[in-house]
Image (cartoon, rainbow, N blue to C red; front, top):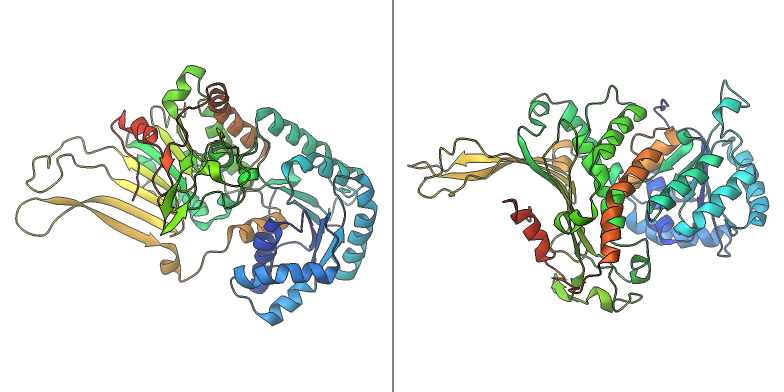
Length: 511
């Protein structure tokens, strides 16, 4: 589906609008687009949830966080933006709520000239998805959901839906949700959001790989030793223990399945035939299909489970995960997970992709580290002050918080003799382009309004990701750990994760 350069006119309907995501991310993201001049001339936003609120109360609920989170908040621009925001109370899991909702949508479409274009956003708890999606369809709100039965083929309006993660909690639930969506929307109208894919440096991976001829010839098993993908947070569960300790929580489900396998796919994919969404997602899907799912007896060798105990981060005492509110005192939930993924294809055979994610870690970072093989002739092995073993070269893709790309190679230390030391060449995104990266949700919301699915997952990608991680999750369920917690808050995770790499003569990039 070809995307327009500008967003189409339309009405954005947010279900679960009284929740945290709407005020912290969605409304500030839409406001930033408005200030940038990227919102269409005719747009409006309708929030809906079970909480009873007037339009004015909803606006007052949104204003403080927008003032805090928006890139460039000013009262005059906010007044023009928030005038287009309305609220309709109702329980989206009950069909009777959709009569008043549909009436309000019609009134707003008339008032703001948005036409029949509707973008639904499910900012809801996952167990509410099925009923909400079915009610949208049953209410007749998806008038143009089936492209082959279009009522206006020359200028076909659209109805699209954005689904937040977690997208299911296992392979069966993910496949079920895909079927529910498929009964009500065409696949081209379904946007499975992953906010990591909206980050500038993630998108820059495609440019880095495919617009620079110096990298592609060495982007394979002949030159690359292994690849690390890390998403580390310094915070714990921050009062969300009840949610995080649920069956759908944990680092393997939430982060590795939900985010890091997408980063792996972008790093490992073959060049697409074009930059169209379908072509890019086809190549990502091939990588995930080629990723090896663990056999039961392999799980202890290729996956590590961790849970943080008490510790200290930035001078603040952090309680153990099991002491957090809402967490089972004997919880087996993983706040850390490391996973050795292998891709069975020609380019990557034998190259480990080490994925890890954890809470209450030593440093906040999301990065991809490409570790090249060491030079075959150890010419400088016996230098007086140089290292005994010359480390391999690295390319480090910093996704957050310091967006950029770093190339690490060996250089000679000035002076007599032949002492060598690693040196770094840095590309800092903000410094180079004198611009602040747009927030991920702004990018993704704009793309959904433009009809561009490039940065969203398709059906096959979601189901393939679950196929990869589920054997490890099943093993962990069948073999509860008796050594949790196994890392202190403020450290780099459990010792078993270090041993997993050390067994092959490797170590984590912990700088």
